[in-house]
Amino acid sequence: MTAPDATSPAASTAPVASWRESLSVYLQPRVLIVLFLGFSSGLPLALSGSTLLVWMAEAGVDLGTIGLFALVGTPYTLKFLWAPLVDALHVPFFTRAFGRRRGWLVFSQLLLIGAILLLALTDPARSPLFVALGALLVATMSSTQDIVVDAFRVESLPESEQAAGMAAYVAAYRIGMLISTAGALFIVTGFETIVPRGAAWMWGYVVMAALVLIGTVTALAATEPPQSERAEAATQDEGAISRVLHAALGAFSEFLRRKEAWVVLAFVVLFKFTDAFSGNMTVPFVIDIGFTRNDYAVIVKGVGIVATLAGGFAGGFVARRYSLATSLWIGGIVQSMSNLSFTWLALVGVNEWALTLAITSDNFCNAIGTVIFVAYLSALCQNPLHTATQYALLTALAAVGRTYLSSGAGYLAKATGWPMFFAISVLVAIPSLMLLAYLQKRGHFETLEPARV
Image (cartoon, rainbow, N blue to C red; front, side):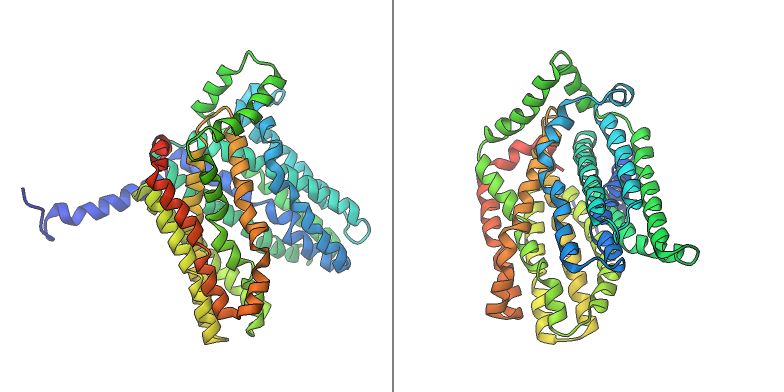
């Protein structure tokens, strides 16, 4: 039997059918549910972060106090501590009415709306302490929503839709962040034409609270994941304390009993390290070589966001097209090699086109790596009894590279200069790729085949 020539119908329609099949996956109801939940997860992040800091700066709060507000983000790194409660406990009325995951979704979103409205009523100029408490409540409710959304996404998507779900989630998360940063600032500016500045900020936050309802409506329209229903049935005779202990201890013990568990954990910590190592120094680098912060902001919020969205969907296509191990190789290599675009920019100097290409390359490649990495973390969480706890723990470990291991990047940049620094940041990826090769050789990814994307 001979292969069809280039002009035969089979040869001409196969690629089209492949692309049509790939695109059609994004229109599946479960993927669309995950997309809207991703928007709901990304929306609140800046409301207790960068957007709030703009409000405080305009209100005249001193820089020392503003700097301390970085601590408000602590719940996002410690959310694994109360994730067992989400896995194990029932929320009165909500669990009975909507199910184990959907009940927590609706409950956390209603609390999030209340927290944002409470923050809207504060005055940064008069009571920074109350602003801090309001922001801490927003971050806590937002991170709780993240716990539930992650568990719902992992449990609800079948294997054939995992890759599309990851891409949709990451893209929508970025859009949510864009709405609560640039979008919120535009809304506040609009309100300033009809009300005083303080009231404009209040109404801007009220609008953001209303947008959380998109996630609530989505949760109400969704169906409870079958895996979650089976897990609920398996533990219905246990008491609340017993369920919490099983969720907390079971998540750790079940994971550590796996073959090569400690190598897997090291790989989780290091995979995004190359991205974080260079990313933490991107803004100082751009300013240091002569660009203004407005140059950087316009490009990042413009082509940077577009490149991130395109990279997210490209990552979904890679994860759908190739095995999980191959996808991780692709993601790990492209996200590290993208750092060379900043080495090139350091040699070129102040050139807006060069900056645009560097930012586009960096955002596109890092988004590919992020989607594939999220797919891998999801594949590691295969037990519905403690999906939320395991996923929250893994994401907390992944943040170690971003938060702690990359803290010395500035000293290296100062010692080597910018071109060499970004070249070295490519080499930072080598340990994670060595661990990837080891895990692949030891058959680690074959154990994940039931959850493979």
